[in-house]
Length: 360
Image (cartoon, rainbow, N blue to C red; front, side, top):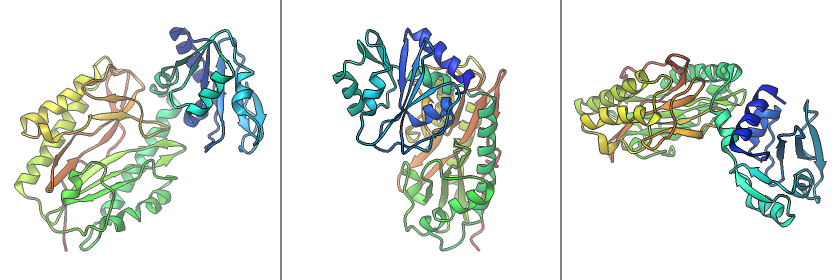
């Protein structure tokens, strides 16, 4: 067990008045126990107790060896993992559960009268995971460095006659040659009007002169995620499209410049939104400015008009304003940023200058 992270989680539990907590999110379990397991339909849980009587509930099929500082309770197929957990729970106390716990396991605990009550307690993990420690910062920097290098390679794939699918099909091999493992999410490759569609799936659209090319891509490195978006133009760029691009870039730069500890995240979103509104694209910015990221590409917390959070050291999130004109163009520019003790560190360094790729 990572003792420093565990102590931070136990401190959050104490703050929330939760004496016992069960965690079933595989990423959160790995965050504390150092082992990732995709349980599929099987029960996989970490039980924490303020008294220190922590337990891991694991199926014999899991590739799990010893975990220092915690007892592992094993069960086999045909046995009831939830019942094994119930044997650990203090029945006269409320049990905190993470929000991702499957209903069939939670209902089974209820049938067994495992606790006196149940309470959603994801924040005890999410608050801690939102503040990256030094090891995590280093991994996130490396994941983003790979993404920067990959983007330069992806640009080289853009040529006359290529389709979205053809580009998308070559990205993973490039990531792996650069040291990445897998995609952190399904990549978006979108030409022209397709780029105005949120999370467009690459299809057989053929690139043509004057198209924008939106690449929203990311990979994993040592289980940590990168995420970056760049928008290019092919052959030529019209004055109207240039104005869209420059407006989105101005919004992103203004938002990034405002990041420092203590600034409400909704204010950062508002800065980007005002820039785009003044440029005439307010209605075309159709999503939040950013999301938190780490072991998962979308973690709890966002940069949006309704975010209750303020920037705090160790937070890593995206800054990705966009403007989407249906059937015409979509522009999004995205970096990951790390809040430091006195400001912000950009994790992405691939150029954001408008680039027109020659059509010959």
